[in-house]
Length: 229
Ligand code: ADP
Ligand code: MG
Image 1: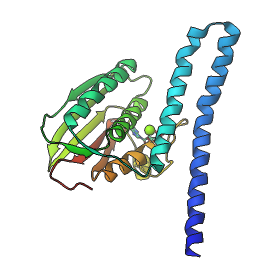
Image 2 (image 1 turned 90 degrees about the vertical axis):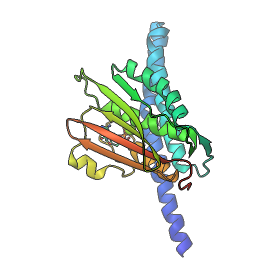
Image 3 (image 1 turned 30 degrees about the horizontal axis):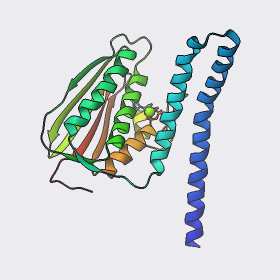
Image 4 (image 1 turned 30 degrees about the vertical axis):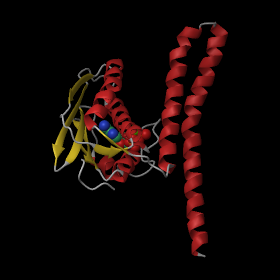
């Protein structure tokens, strides 16, 4: 009986997720379809290329996030947090340039290592970056993103600060709940996924935000010699 109950809950979770994935992928799919039809009709392929590519990338990101939720094995290696930050910096710089965002980066040097699955840590950072970019209003002409890293209590701490719209109490209260989103095109799995990945690394994931001022996201990863689970 107990097994049946668990099974029932699992199936419920599966159908919830399946519905979520299908729902999220339908939007970019219909955009792609429409733009491909336009490209054919007008014979102007270049004009629609970027949109199709953007939407394909969006679908890819959504699938990546959903896949990670169900991924059981996490292969980890000892790696330099400084190196990870430096390779991320290139992607973030490009993204900021694209979205007209001033980017400031200050990486704290250290010889110590963190025990991580690098692509998952990158996925977390990209989710945080995406949320910051989406938090800048259209009229915000003074967009800034600051990434600062530091060592605190033998954790390598990465802090990402934006001066976007921030979150009111009502949003902060719900933050971290799976599928909670305030966006028409949101999935609501970014924040819970980031939290899960960082905690699976034995780390800490924190968000602070002030409405109309900005948001700060802090990731803390245990440094060499500390707890490794
Ligand atoms: P999604 O981005 O798909 O909505 P997330 O789990 O990534 O889902 O984020 C959940 C919600 O948290 C967002 O809809 C948004 O309201 C809020 N949020 C997250 N990051 C930020 C940020 N940097 N600034 C303002 N609001 C944010
Ligand atoms: Mg998000």
